[in-house]
Image 1 (tube, rainbow, N blue to C red):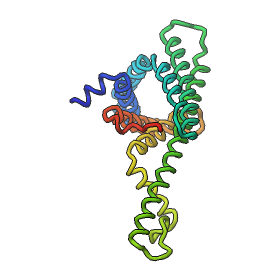
Image 2 (image 1 turned 180 degrees about the vertical axis):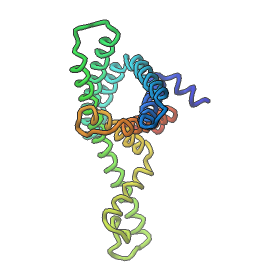
Image 3 (image 1 turned 90 degrees about the vertical axis):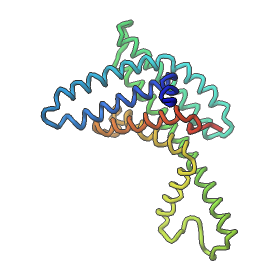
Image 4 (image 1 turned 135 degrees about the horizontal axis):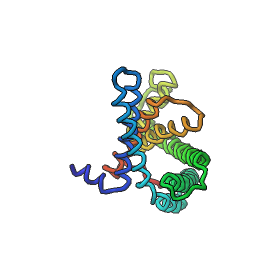
Length: 246
């Protein structure tokens, strides 16, 4: 109950709850569309999905200010690579929220001059750039974490006097298996990095599909959005699991 109250008291938490509901409806709709006699349920899910999507737009109206603040903070990051990735990512997020606000103004009838298709394409493109740059930052952090884990393991092996020729990337297995094992252990030791990577990987399925770069069906997009939303909710409930900048 405390976790739910903590989530519902934050606009970001409410947006994550709405987003999880939206994509859960999308996934269920995909699973039920091919089944006979489920037409009414599919229509109800479609209606709920549309209502939740509209409600989420209200939560996002002030996000452009938060994105500007995040851009200012990312400029202060000491490490060059995360600083570049985060700053460019947040700038794209600012543009995305500006486009999203214009689309909201258009949807409520406050203006008739905006070209909805054009603004939607701009919003999707900048959202894609934001996620791509965020994933580049995640990749950089993963490589650093793998380097630390490999270094620690090498030191332990030297202290235990393993036989000559025993290396970090050769654990009685192929190189690829050793690499994947090192990757998994690195992510296991850094849960915030794992959550952020999973969230961004799932999120990027949406603009990839909308831009036609990689077409996915409704079920995959819905599942990806649901997993991403749940990962985001975890970081709201447990702030210590949010990936920090250095």
